[in-house]
Length: 494
Image 1: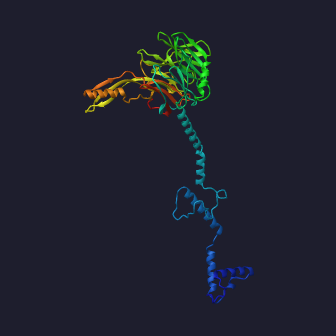
Image 2: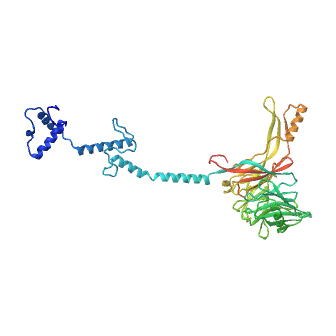
Image 3: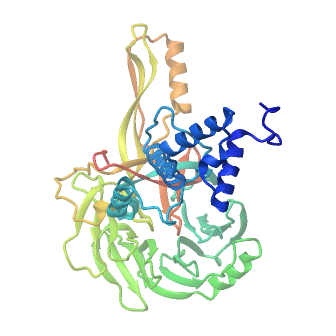
């Protein structure tokens, strides 16, 4: 055809289009372009008729394509995949599609989804607020218990007739202890840094530091039988070697707070949380013990019988030790003003009140330990002994009025903090050796006298540790116990 039609290499369709435009410009008729003798004219006429029969609207085609792509995007967001649907890389623009806000109306599905999101959007901050409130309640109001952590020995002393009396300075400044009537200075690691001896014919006892550590109260006894309570200003320095001369000068110029008659014995000194009132017990020659409060040079105020007073963290109450009907020591709550009825708590002695609200005390119990067993598995040699343990009462119970109890009854909600040492000692080992030498094979029980494992205890001013004087053979160990709080459920046994 290229040889018969000189069209310079152009296709027939394009040639016809050019001829038709030329025909319209010149006003010539369509039939004038058709040669009489060739088939090319008939072909061009046929092609023009086909094009007229199937019109093509370019604008409508582009709009239809954009709408199909938009429907495909909506279905893809809802997780619906249509077979044969075209896909594009994530984030790439769709060909021919218009973006939101550029003239294309949003579909009903998109409008409904946006409406639901706006309707329930307020639920998210509400849920976060409820979760935060529950966490705060659980942290502040949920029941907690006190547990013992790491135990470390600070220092050790020879056993004396009197229990180890000590005090803890705040902020890791050290400790004070009384041994042989002299005041010992210990640093925070338990190393003895100095000793302050009283003048001849005198002795010190029952040191007590204010919570801030700036005032020291002591009992000063005389060989003639008199005694007095004195107060001295403490240097605001760690109890290092250079602090000993300062403490000695302070005690030499100490103020006398109270003088007692001959034969009376003041003991158990304890400062109130504000450092203004001193509680102490006074033992009379007949053996009666009474609790007194001493404030700013005023006359002492009696709180009734008892000893070893311990202040509550807010200063509204004191826990005191009193003798029960059977001779067993008991803990009672009294108010500083002396008004109101005293409340019995439980059996125990040596109360110590933590700044965090926990009340610790010492309670004796009878323990029975099996040393050896017979061949049939039954106990052969056992030891029965009176031992002591340290227990605590939860602040939640102390904030309410304790239920009335019968005599010699104990609280069901106090918790064990430190258990007695059940390791066999020299007495038990010697007894076993004696039975072995005698060839005894019948069950035997060794009855040991009551052993006070714990002599005294105090919480540190921050309440994070408990200082305990524990008897160990012929010595007394000053032990520091790390404390931690544990949150418990309402149904968990206290």
